[in-house]
Image (cartoon, rainbow, N blue to C red; front, side):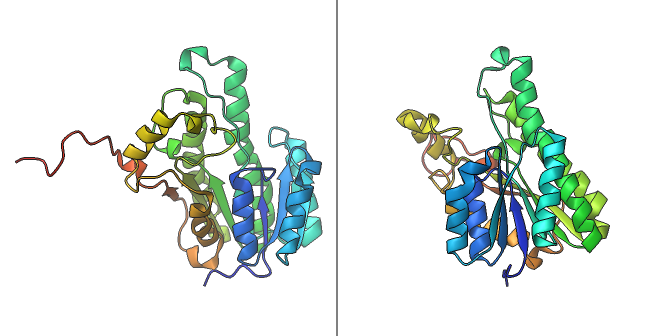
Length: 262
């Protein structure tokens, strides 16, 4: 039901982290891959890995803060494969600071990458999808798309913006056969946040707030990204799919055992 054989997917930000897991999942479902990073040479080992799965893969340079770079990547991807069926808008960054310490440049770095970059990459690829009357765009959000956390003001603003942007683009492009959804991971250990997971007390506190009682593991996202990329999600657009173990339910550390008294 979720066969992507013969389709081409672009996954941005695949030099490390969750972007690589998204790309692997799509490749295992049959898709060929366009892999991107600001440093193209960093993609060589991962490109070879995708090819070892029997898929065609190319690597392209992309700086999502540079419109010319975005347009160049889109044109090169189209020239290489002819049609782009899937876009996973994954490239992102974070600056973790108390709100009073956030600088003007910090704000611009995060918003320019996570929000403006997401929009203009989607725009460049959607132009090509609309011409073919088919496309699946998956914008990567976060549990911070729906919840606020101290120390993450620019990041939360950017991810909340991605959720709103997703709904707007879904309304714009749905008539052209292009769906746009937001995949929002919860707390997963990545290069951006690995320092937090070195604090045992913080991890225990986090796990207490997650109904399934563990942080996310990268493969927990495989099914969601393949589903949203596939024909089986054809009637789903403008939605935010949280893959967060339930932390967005607002669960908190239990203080009283057993059912609440009436």
